[in-house]
Amino acid sequence: MSRNGHRRTYLAAAAFGLAAALPTHAVRAQAVFDAKSAAHIRSEFVSDMDTLHVKIVALAKAIPAEKYNWRPGPGVRSVAEVLMHVVGEWYFWAPNSMAGKPPADFGDPKTKLPGLEKSVTTKDAVVAELEKSWAYCDTQIRSADPATLTGSYRPWGQPIDRAAFGMAGDLHEHLGQLIAYSRTIGVKPPWSK
Image (cartoon, rainbow, N blue to C red; front, side, top):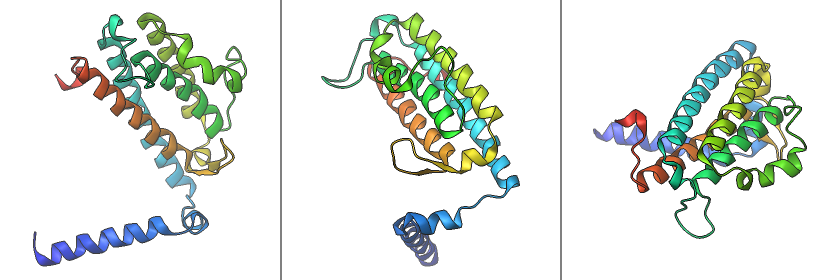
């Protein structure tokens, strides 16, 4: 890389660092999306969520049933618990970040979500729950007003801006976690064969 290339890289990194250090209200004031931009963000978000869904379910199906209780260490989520955590997130993120409501048969999220990871542990039941929760989440996402995906909400008393980015980022983290789990137990992600 040329000297000027290094300089541009350094300046870009410095600008990004400065933007990250700005107070939230300063960033929020600059992040107003018009309707066209919000619709584009929803389109990209839906595409990303579809990819996440396909890969997470593919891993869930590729991992042998006898490995669903495997965990990398004491106090760390098992394979089944990570997958059920994703189920909970598909139920949690969609209604909370997009002003929807949980499914009628879901019950009280405050009591249901904390126990969800421990309540379903077999492969067939976990895969069924993944598909059921995804169908719900997908409907919520596709029917959401694009402005709700780029707006903010307060799930834990703290504002989260641009809800779609929070949801996608968190689910990508869990996909990475599941890829690491699967490779550790000798399962190659189906899309990488």
